[in-house]
Each structure stands twice: as structure tokens, then as C-alpha cells.
Length: 170
View 1 (spheres, rainbow, N blue to C red):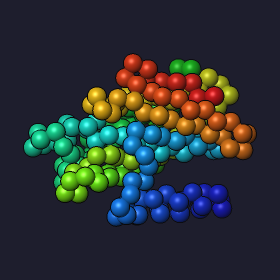
View 2 (view 1 turned 90 degrees about the horizontal axis):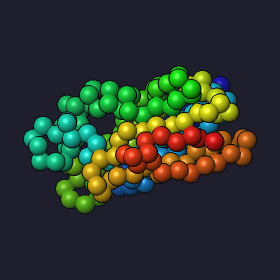
View 3 (view 1 turned 135 degrees about the vertical axis):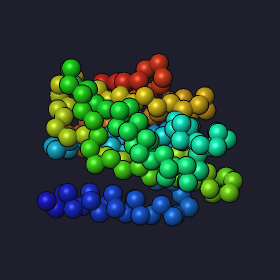
């Protein structure tokens, strides 16, 4: 239970510190942190992945557009980020989305969306792979992922692209 409380407070800190002048995570990067209960996931995706929510069609996502399109973005993320083990697909649980303003410009445009959640009941020893379908525009065409199972000393880094959307984790 203490382990859960520690992670809960970490996630709360990250979510509520959005007003800080720094991103929660480097753009187009992600981490998969394994433990006995599953995989904690944090990924930074370009807002250009979600331009269907861009109602004024200016090719930029504002906070207002994000709020209006949040449900559709939420569904997109749930369908587009998953883990696969054989024929079984696991989707993120406890999904949270945190829009991050661009450091350049007026601060009203979102340049990154931080995706946080957990994959439950996955077994890292049985051909487990991570998949992401979001690659935005040409400037945001890859996502660098680092997978760690600290207790077992396992670590793997890999890059996903639109041509290679999945990778075996360990």
C-alpha cells in the first residue's frame, strides 16, 4: 500500500505542477517503469497528433480546443497506445492527459500532451511488446522509449516510428 501511495503522490505532483515553466518530460520521449503489478507509463506526444480537435483549422491546438476535444483525444490515446502479449492486447488504465504549453509564443498553444497511465497484469517474460501509433508531423516523427524493471536490473531503450510502431520490451 505504501508503494501505491508513493506513486499516487508523485503523479499528483506531476499533474498539479503544470503551471511550472518547464515540461513534465522531454518531447517525443516516454518511459515504461515495470513492477510486480504492471507498467507505469509516461509519454510525451506532439499535439500535432490530435489536429482533429483543431476546430479553427489553424494547425495549432489551443487549450480551449483541447478541452472541447478532450473526450475524442482520450479515446484516440486509449486505442493508439497499448501493450501486446501474443494475441492479447492490454490498454492503459487510469489514463491522464496533461497538455503542455509551448515555451515559444503566447502560451495559449499546446505543443505536447503528456500521457500517463498504467498497464495492468502484463508479464515481461512472455514476448511483451509496446505499441504507439502517434507520430505527428515530420518534425515529430519518432518517439524514444526507455523501459526499466529496476528491481530486476532490466533496461532497454528503443525508438518507434510510423514504420515501426511496436517493439518487444525485454
